[in-house]
Length: 139
Image (cartoon, rainbow, N blue to C red; front, side, top):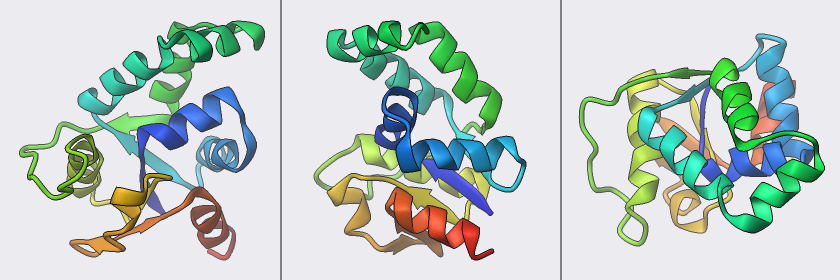
């Protein structure tokens, strides 16, 4: 299964673990292919520099750079040809959609209500982390 993870899911996996981190474990096992883009990696860097998240990384004995490197090794970076305006309330969500389209992803995993409200886009299903994990586990 091919998946593009929204930045909120990646942050959750890196900071708190849980279900989003289980998606990382599936990617490590090679059963789930993750995709990102330069814009999404930059957004991830920006979010992780917020003081409360950076201190949480420090308490886990890791750094922003190590967290970024971990995700960069798990996800293949694609360069979307175009970024279309799709999500009216949050243009950052258009970046994850563009990466998913470029990667020919099956799913986009997000916790963002604006993005999830789409349900699907161009045959790419949008789902919460728990739904994606169940989908992967059920093969």
